[in-house]
Image (cartoon, rainbow over all chains, first blue to last red; front, side):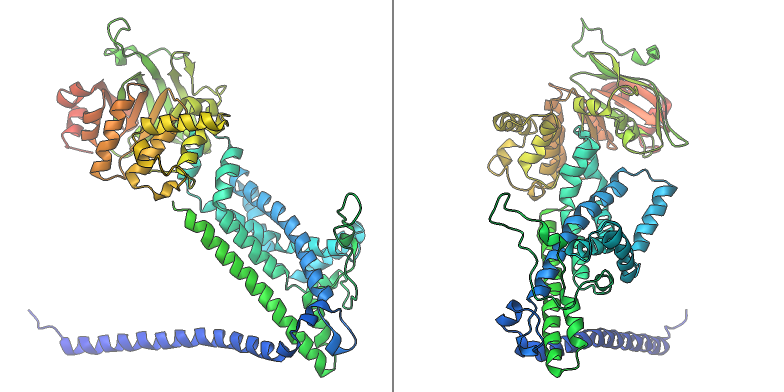
Length: 307
Length: 272
């Protein structure tokens, strides 16, 4: 019997402990660098833009005079483009995701489609802009309109919605599917009355993440020809005469927040930089609010569902 | 149609001497998962108003056999049936490709191994099978749901919270809820796939007691890996091994004087 080599063993343990602590510190630093840089940027943006964040800023059109310029046409444009994007991308993306996950036979063809849906999510957004310029603006004759922009961004976020839908559907256990089938449900009843409602939290999260990406997109919108200076609002969707709804606004020219911001940063005057910072704060807050909504929705819906 | 494998049915009572009529019977049933021959020439009767237990070691095919009865295997690609399961009294082969699996599942319901209530309210869980059958009138649904919950011995525990989420119930209550859900559609045969394997002994006892009450109304086919459970609740027991029925007998007979050596080895714990 040999005595336990306590001294050597303790040295070894001390060395292991040291490495462990070294990594803890490194990891914390890595985290802090990322967070602090972001926080610093945001603070600087907020401080710079703060004097311009007045109610008038939201209710004024852009102007040659920096102090009078506002983001009215930009935020209304962003909102309407997002509306078109959501109305297109949600039904298309969810239906495609449901089909791929629940209906499509599992063979080489669907495997190829699956891989390519993933790849589409990585295609640079300007490529979508070029595609949309040819297809929506010229081929379909939608012009440089809110409709074209909304459809372009819908194409852009479609893969995100499809992938999120599939992941949410896959999270529903097979035992729930079998329970529905065992009671005589058809596949459509199983999907529409069980699987989709139970995965709504995940699907909505994916949709909102997609929309929050779309709201910040600039390149494809410039490609299809959004204007940088718009001093009027689109046609109102509600009219005084029958049928009280108008879709003329879909055809109107527009601008969006990131383009307005881009326009201001390219001006030489210092005062416009303040406007750009303020618009940046608005855009950031909108994006963060959307992400917060996604987190809250997921929490709300998941709380009800325990497998 | 495949002829009945007569030798399996020595115990079959004549209708005038015994009340137990045939509810269903497997006739030379073969089943393949892809190239795996999971069930081999199974012929087995299921009597009405009685409990038939399927026992055997893991992988012997007892769950596979059970899931043939409601065509669960149709949901997954690569599965193949041959032979038949004849449902009485209309004498229809439910495995026939002309028979709609959805119709089969509306006549034969199933309780799964793990309680699997929908993440909906207690009421909606029980009412779902009825809604699938096109029953939408509120009063009809309420009457049926109450009847099913009473049938599953759950009514007094949940009658004041029918609109709470089913996931708030305990494991045993959830399984009884699943039984109520299976009963609500007035099935002719209820399949139980190891219904107590995820439950504690007290919940298990209440489920077993419930099954004994239920057999007054329906035929029950149960898979269990617990031989004591089979001995306690069932009237007939089949011992399966490697995809074949080794022995089918009266439960008392099978557990006291089995005809086959393999059965004796299994029930005495020499293998399995």
